[in-house]
Amino acid sequence: MTRRQRWQSLLWPLVLLALFVGTFRRAAPTLADAAVAAECDSPPPTNGQRIGAADIDRLERCVAIDVGNAELMVDLGRAYAADNRPVEAERLYRRALGIDPANSDVHVWLGELLLSRGDRAGARREAQDALRWSRSVTQDRSPRAERAAERSERGVGAPAGFARRGRGAEPALV
Image (cartoon, rainbow, N blue to C red; front, side, top):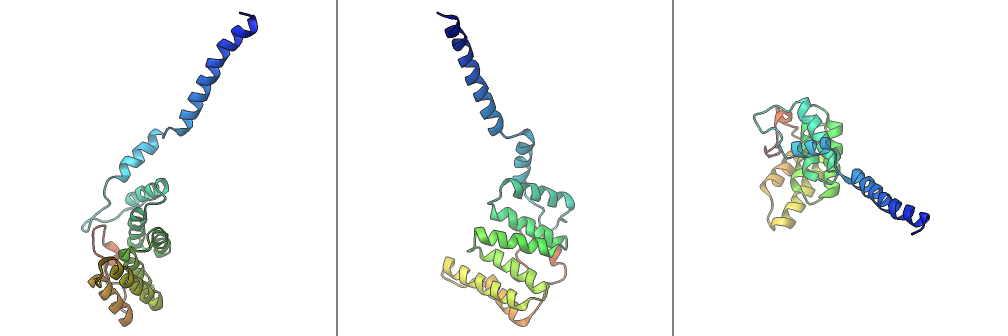
């Protein structure tokens, strides 16, 4: 074995080891990502609990990790609405509808938000979309979507205390 062959036989495993370590080091999730992912599995506040800044921060981190999760976007949108941040809430509701346009509940939530901001035409469109999607899924008109349509026609805004509702509550148009 020549000197060159000896170096090649020693160098080749080291190069492979460096590639292996480099590849898995970039691909492996960090400990912080794992902690946030575990945190995202915990449910958001429910009806009786107030949504706080810590809940909003947690939901923002969760949405940043799972960018295609419409349910997380709706949860964060509802938290923004509860925190009197309607622009951010509307943006997230629309993003969620971009992922799942057939979700009639999101149409109801967005319609409620638009109605509370005085956009009757937008609220009416969302109520009609909620009716259309609920009908196509259940072959029956959703009572929740029916009431949303009625409220948007009458121009009734969001009821007092709507923003304080948490996850698990029915949309306030109901």
